[in-house]
Length: 497
Image (tube, rainbow, N blue to C red; front, top):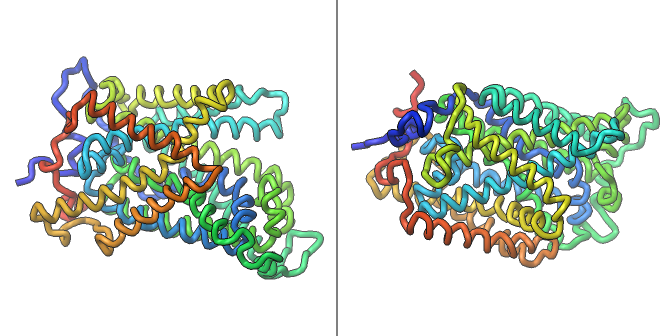
């Protein structure tokens, strides 16, 4: 007999008095299109618009494309695992719920704080970068003023309602997507010599840039491997679909649809844009430009290319910050539900917004911003290093959670044919995904530019485990029912009336 269906988990909170936590709940108000754009908003940022040229320079034109294909493959594997978990446990801030139920509460606790810190650090970076770009048009306005304006704007958007956040993120992400599509279409035509907007009408370049003086892989296989590691981080944010699961209408229908669409869009947008940039810009030049998008748009004759891309990149930064702030608030709210963070963080507005968790996350994001100025070589270095390590660590947590979750479900007599969504080719998908991610972590040790992520990331993980065991004991103490009392959502549980 099932005591607590998983789709009712948000309602399975302990009995509390009115003085403890208001009896309000997160609202399921977002559709599949919101989930897709939230994921794209978290993924598509300055890394693609500004740093993609560096990627091409390091791995070579063909090597960069291969690196992004590998990254997209790993994203697909992780998303395939995430789909089953997000439907089994459609709760807000769900990553650590997966780990806590499937692996252990200490792992869930560590996963939550890793992911929260990842986005808190990103918030400060996004605000600073957007403020610097605004000085192109308003050079007299200090960067810190723009940081405060952007912080207040994103806080307001997140504080109104989940649907307002989702709708805003949809349109912010749409601007970025349209810019990438324009690059692919116009740049793709220019590769074959069709440049109607240009007054110079350059000849067709085809794919001549792929044959470099040093061969197809000028940086060697090592350059492709190191670039692949960077690409994993570039795709971080796709897992935000899991964070928003608790505020999604009809999770069994909308989450799988959003996951499939997100992976397909990321593959087309990232690989397509990298192919166009690599074909048009010589790989040596690609590593020197401030934004390869600007160079390509100027090449094809787009008027005011620099100003257009400045606007798009600012939009991209704010979109990523918007998704990050949403994620931080939900992660703190979920930790408080579990009894692993102050209960005050569970307080919701009448529209179901965790307002205190939102405020704390933004405040500490601004502290991260300040540390990047006053303690760049100490505090901020540690924060950035742990945040970089967190991306792969959280993905490893997701795929491991799916493996143990499915195994426990079957051992308990569950029939996988009743699941609303099941990861294909189990257990191959989670095992292969975990192995590839583990290889990427090991390889970080051989990259001088990324090895700090291990120096600080691994001790941080150890500290989280030790704190949890000291504070809550080996088994922990949560508000929710134990794993054995929860069952995955089935097709019947989530059927649309």
